[in-house]
Every structure is written in structure tokens, then in C-alpha cells.
Amino acid sequence: MRTLFPGLVRLAFLFSLAVLSQAGLRPAKFSSASTATRAPEAIVPAPSRPCTVCSFNMLTPFHSPTNEITTSNGMIDFTMVFYASGLNMQPNLSYDIATISGGCLPSVNRTTNINYGGRTWEVFITTFGYFDAEITSGSALPAGTIVDLEGAVSQ
Image (cartoon, rainbow, N blue to C red; front, side, top):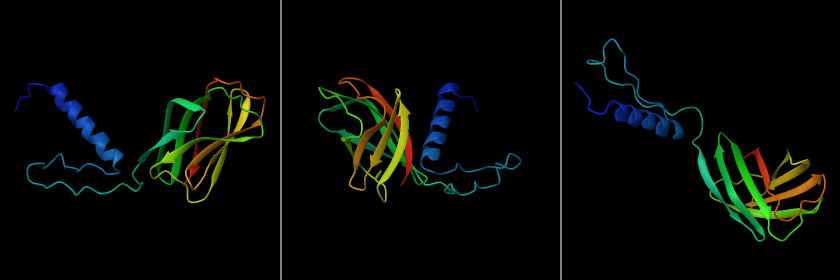
């Protein structure tokens, strides 16, 4: 049988593989020797847990041009790009940057250290859904300066 749009069929196939992979499933397997007489194997869940996509809700005076938070395989992965409007962030003070919506909360409060822009940041993710950041090493951050914190903590 001839397909009028082979590129479109291939794109649809690749998309379906991506969807199955994201859901933690593997596609059915066929034997190349006997595809006409053999039924496909059942779809079996992959050993990993499915990915959960959540969201950040920015708290005043913080703004975020882009951010992302997900969970997968017992880890919370995050990217938080933010800046403070009209606020100089001082070292050794913890700031509530955002709250987290969805299933991306840790089982206990978690922290991680991230180096960015000549400063060391300690990020706190709480069981109540707060995403906090503190400059633990380095100078104050002037208002409007963009910060990009990327990391992961155990769920």
C-alpha cells in the first residue's frame, strides 16, 4: 500500500512514541518474521514513574519570564528564572519567590545549593509549596537583575 504523505505518517508515529514514553509506557513489539500471524505483545509500563508537570505562582515583588517545575522518578526538577521589581535582595535573608501548584511538593522540606552569577544560592522547597531562595555567598542582588536557578531535589 502506498501512502500519499509518508512524512506526515512518520511524524505521527514519532509523536505517538513520544506520548507513550512520556506516560511511562513502551510501544507494542512485533516480530519482523511473522507480523501477519503474531499478535503484538501487551504494552508494559516502564520501570520509571510518570512525569508530573506543575506550575509556579509568583509572589510580589518577583516576576518570572520563564519557569518550569516537574516531578519524575522521585525527583523534583525546576528551572526558575526571576527578578525582583523594586527590591534589592540582601545576602543571608530568605525570600519567598513563588508557590508551587500541583503534585510537585516534597515529602519533607528540601534544600539545594546553586551557583549563579557569582553568588551561591540556597533554594528551599517546602511541603507547604513555597519556593524560597537565599543568597548564602556573594553580594546583594540589585533590583531588576535576572537570576536563573536550575536544580533538582528528592521528592
